[in-house]
Image (cartoon, rainbow, N blue to C red; front, side, top):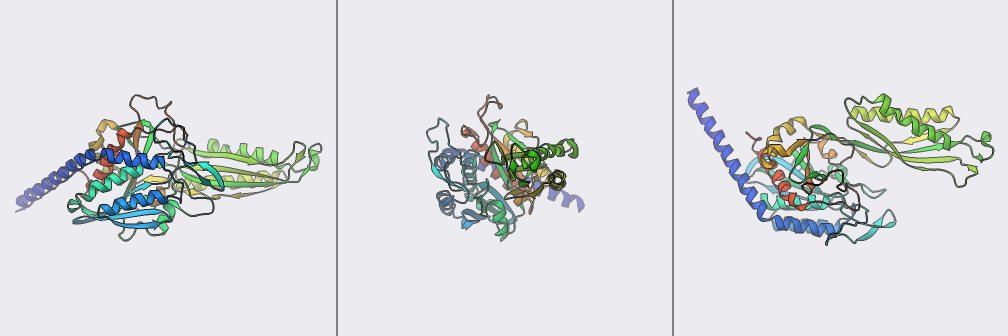
Length: 435
């Protein structure tokens, strides 16, 4: 009897595996058939970028596309976000897929026919706008995934939640936005999400390749504002002052010892950067106050807490030693957690990535000190965030324009791999992983 049951189970498992592979074969064909549509969507978004919390045209296009596929759509989520819910024909888990929508205040200078010429407002100033980080690509790819999966919803074992997120680059000063606000508004509930997947194109990784990292893959970020107050005096009589500029210089130098002397560099990287310092109006006046702005990056919660404690101690005690006072606000306006790829989920889904891209094209990447607010989703549910190559084949990564620059460029021939990867991750997760 036990032998019969075992053989029956093996037959059922093999049949289920065969059905899954047949579905994924259909996905591949359907994706190839809509490649031009995906590229056209991307080019339209690229030519008409919108900044964070201003993605009105963008979200309208996305919502109309999802509705045309018969997907249940919610708009106005976290101001301009769009959420689509696709219920499969069979019971199973809820898988979320996320794409970000916002552009950056960058003036484009790429020599492409669909380059952005948009002018807009950012924090009260007129600026250019550009998709200088690939969010246009992310949206087009996820719209492609929605079209493909909706066409075979009767075969899906579960529900897919398509999350189109505004303001990944941060909302305008004084506003809420991004993934944090989406989570606060319940985007991971009703129905509750069991796992979430996301991708990011990379302009310095060759097209056709996927990179990933289990655990901390992108840094937590905190911005900070440091205000140093001293005693103003004539520049000719510094002994009459408590010079906040000298104190600020000592603070800047001392902050760098956190990385060199307090951080275990064999485990994780970290960054303390002062990017702005303002104090004084004339060459012969020692000012009363200096204001500094900076950013702090870490790859674990423990390191993040240590950095914040050390920064506060160094700033206040250095000022005190000089007879000045100092205040630290950290975070000042921005905090993103570590983008943490759940190790169990990553190991479970790695065979899917290797199957869709080829094992030789799926590469382990080092952690980076850039940040991603996808991390807010990963704080609540297991998540996997991968990187999709967007650099033309044969190009030197060191010479490829980086993200957030006017010359940022993405090779569109890699988009179909992105669609197939997200679709196959969804299908395999719904079916319990690859065999």
